[in-house]
Image (cartoon, rainbow, N blue to C red; front, side, top):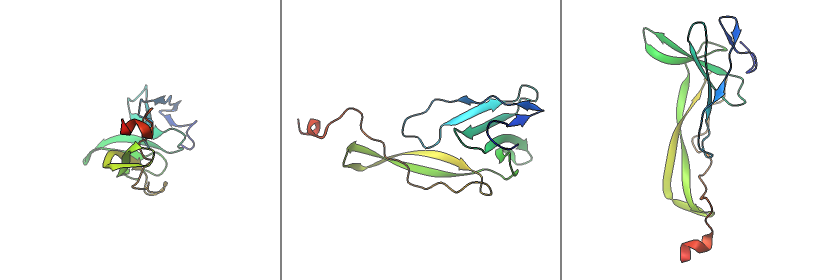
Length: 125
């Protein structure tokens, strides 16, 4: 299984569907389910690596479709800005999966969450 256009299961090409997410999120998955064996898959938009949901003696977990390695995850923080200059230290966190063999470990600090339709002057009344 190589390349995100050719990910197959049971000799059939998987059709990935983009899930809903927020503009600030670093990971908004596409998901697919094999119509033959009902196995679930997940990947990031534009990523050539997909993750396969597996159940074994260790329970449910994701494995890389390229190398079979257990998928790891980091907790990414996105600071919430109240103006275009910064915020008060509040963060939103999200879990970012990655294959430790095939992918680079994501950075801890994600993109800031910018205020929507707020000017700096609106903060001063």
